[in-house]
Length: 107
Image (cartoon, rainbow, N blue to C red; front, side):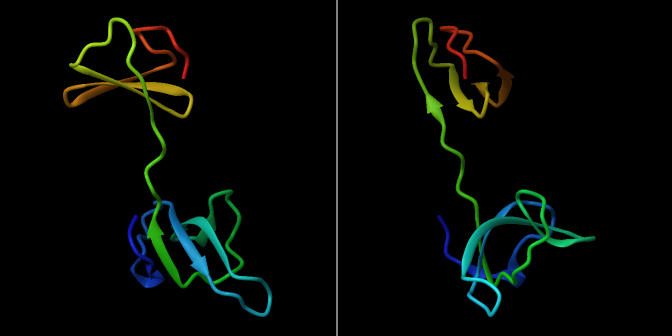
């Protein structure tokens, strides 16, 4: 994970970031996931306007992945779960499916 950076260096293209806001007279210090929109400014990940002034940010870490090997697994394929679907990677291509095509396990 990277270090905290000044908020003025944060991406303003709608990408979610982890933000820090220090304590002020209205609320305690906090860390949360936010993103920037041109119309509304900083928005929390649950779509509410941010009621605090973030001072620092860092990129979100990658999501956890569930890897497995099963009968019929092939070294040419990587099977991993993201959310409620399996991502089957083969070379530079990939496809999303609701279950592992090798063993039938649901994501």
